Image (tube, rainbow, N blue to C red; front, side, top):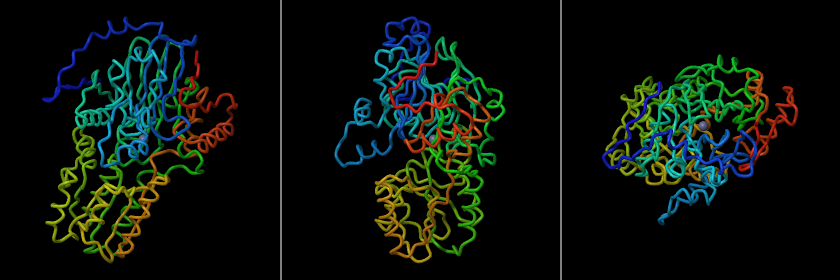
Length: 475
Ligand SMILES: [Zn+2]
């Protein structure tokens, strides 16, 4: 499937597109600076750090860019002020929130395609600000494209190229040197793919992010068949190693569903006010929450803009149906909506703000008394607090307020979307890539993965821990 999307919206100007072949011809070989390699990997963001994931792959005089993520904490730190701040690609690069595409230098002109793996902001968040630095199309699976489309709308910006939708196991040409193959993988966002980059000089598999979920609650199992078929053929594997230091296999999403049932169905919750908070992009989890609410004969209400944005997108691409949910689409409407509720025990409220963000709906409910929370009421965090100082502090403050009202807190009713050490081992044994670049981790996780790879039988020189800008020659 290769469906081009109609990007014409009323408030948009239609961009004129030059024929692709002509653009290719214009590419200049002079732009290949200081490098005699035929093919190389150029890390742009998220290497030896967590966030703003992005990598470029060059084959001769053409470049493809995989993911354009945002470093969320830096972005929030910069924008979370009451004063006006300029949000431009240039500024976001300057503060380290967006991938440093300047690393590409004159090669920027030679980018023939942007390929996105999934809808998490640390993989696509910079697209509306940065993608227009390249004169090319954007390729992704339907849910991801849908989200990117809505992000452009929110920012009142237009993509320079076309947003091109592909099936989660599609194979398509980008420029004249690349063939991109999507390989479906499970993760905490739907329609996540790994991108296998075929070039005349070698193959790179970009598996950032991944999880091996054998009992997914939305969508199929990982495409193990294709991974096995590729055994020994991949020159470089770029792998998500966020939990490489944890000696477990990450549990299935099915476990999270059971944990939710256990908490919501297995406690004395009759007539209690119940608020659940989780990730807006986690469509499988949200669907599970709605299903449990039904078993409790409660009407689910989504409170907050991002919950509506992601679930609307999921409905638009027929991923999931949320017609049985009431959505309060704007933060400004939450107060008036909740004011009208006289019997909160008949509802299950899902709110944004699981990290205790002060401006999110959950914190507002507590601080502004939008629901009268008291003894035996419940707040369920179907999430994990990200261990960065700002989140830990925000959650501490929120939890203290809840505790002072004797609200029951259920924390960490959650399983991760990232594979851990034993998933990494299975990945290596299945694919047997020739070389590995661990990513999506700090030194601790990257080194843990290197140790694991050595245990599996790799030599130290086959495992490259690199920083942004540190080019890796392939051919
Ligand atoms: Zn992700």
